[in-house]
Image (cartoon, rainbow, N blue to C red; front, side):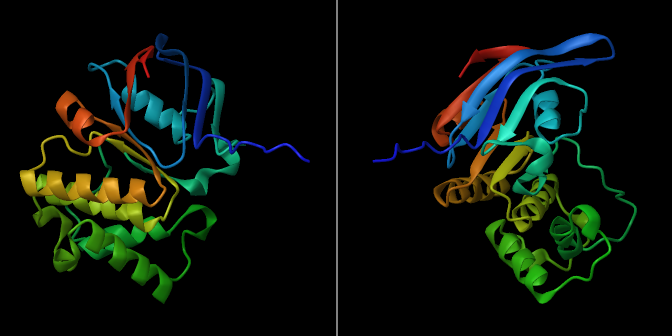
Length: 223
């Protein structure tokens, strides 16, 4: 009888070390996250939370350590991950509709200039409905509130249909309806088997909604 092989963790980080501008920001960070978990990432300002997320997303090359998704190195698994950074780069002076921002989530890698298909539009519609922003799809992104904008960026990430999602302070400064909508969407995704890491400064929020927490202060303090 052959041995049963355990499935690899959704996220595996071993001895991740990052220095920025000569300063050690992450020091041998090591942790694992199993598939289908919603993890709250905690830590004071400057503890390295955003640096961790940027490293997981492959935005900080040259780091020491090993990062794997479902047992695969980052270079082989980019399409499996969607990332909503703390500060989303968007030109607020451009008249961009909500639906167009979300459709950007369907464009990845070398397919940058491919045509938008009916499948893409259906994925964007589903994502907008999950984020509670379908009725605002024709509005301009700059006309929305902070919370509504965050829900649009959530929808953009959902449209990628990735297995792993990273949200860096997506709930910071949002209104109560947006907070409820975002958390409801994240918990539904978790229940569907997605793996989610969410940076938060709200201990109660993490305790109430997350399966586990990851406390960062250059190193993993609590996991």
